[in-house]
Length: 146
Image (tube, rainbow, N blue to C red; front, side, top):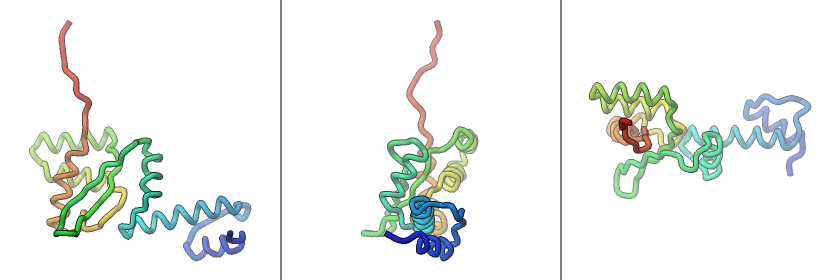
């Protein structure tokens, strides 16, 4: 186990601010969170990070984008569930037949992490946007009269 001073030094190295009264456990959590966040930016998503997102957004499953770029090369990205405002904006775009723009909006505004090609490489990003437009789900129901 790292000493409190080693943890403080690691926080300084990573640019993490901390209280001098922080415990070893608190510093370890800060370091772990920063490392997961940095890895996410690099497209490295651990099972631990996925579980943290599920807990954060209170869901059992996260939406994922899986785009086959070439045999053996799959670009994977993770999205959070869209908010009501995201759904409203996306449905407005969709009703105007702006399917690609709708998907781009949802992909970019619900993005948690993953392969950056899903956002930057034109062909891959367009495919990801089309897939992301399917993130808006509604429960089945019907309108009736009494």
